[in-house]
Image 1 (tube, rainbow, N blue to C red):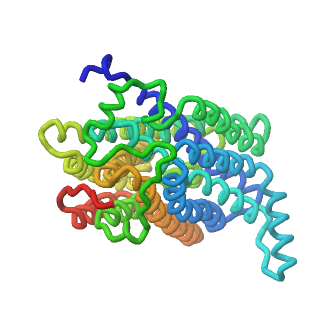
Image 2 (image 1 turned 90 degrees about the vertical axis):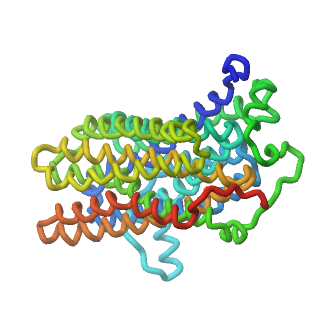
Image 3 (image 1 turned 45 degrees about the horizontal axis):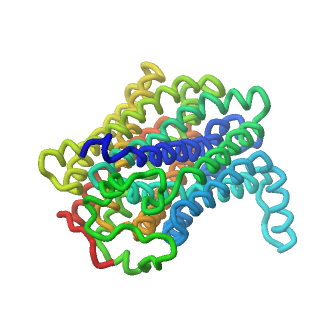
Length: 455
């Protein structure tokens, strides 16, 4: 079909999802960029920092499970508003972490329970609230993509909005250290956190389900639904199908997605939360020193996100169905992170060597992410996409918790021995091999494409 005939409003929705994901990653990365200074100010060890970041991942993991169900129940529009309101408030809450921590310890003392350092308690609670809201972003965005795009365009659209994570990761080191240096670390959390409310106003104006979207023509709606094997998403006022988690867990397709996320999500979390501390510990880079290296690294990941979203179409255009084309692309992508194995052995040359190699690995993760998300909408009906993504997100978050806790323990252990580089070598090895292991698990569980039509 000619694009001029069918219309392009679906790409407006994709743009909104892109900016939501950008804000999502801006908010979650502020802490990691200030981690070195905050660790010094509050006396945090690597294990303390790991516990704070693990609080985010732990709450994020379980919230993802319920976020998918809430989104399927409330609908994409209202659920996204709820999610970004919570996470924006959680982001701002970090600025008042000391007061929050004092309040938490007051409650714990009154209950006769052991208190924790005020700063740790306050930041853990702030991270928990941030995670509760941010858990809604990807299930809602994947559901919106399933609603607004035919299957052949979904991985490309997912790659585009998923690249917002990279833009957020680029903008954060360009802005957060500067704001913190000028007005203090508290203002960095407040200013960045407030951006979400601007996006929320735009979402309220421009988003409706395709069936109710007055800005989109019938030709585009027909194009969106052209390759659906099931009926389009129900409109407002019509009872939506409900599917229990237990029934979804009975499908191998659900487990393939969940285990793929469990094995690989932690790699991205590790890069996101630990890279500033790695550059500080290994090369003495901190504050504004890390702006350029991190901006370059995350700029590279944009190529992976968008290119990875496009890559399966090469196989699809050669005759593969969308799922098989995606799995072939993901196998190719899974080999790329192996370059991260070279980051430590060749890091003595310059800090740019690990920055570039880790950038390649992180770029591969974003390419992988664009495709693994889309395997859900390839195989599951639209009304269950949010729930399945939520289940996978929970597993991915738990994988992130385990990898973060492992990293904190390794860095403290080997740091005490004066061999912290050994700890990073172990972590980089895990990150490099995770994708091939995940692909083999997914392929074993779902060796051939089978769309689910009995939900």
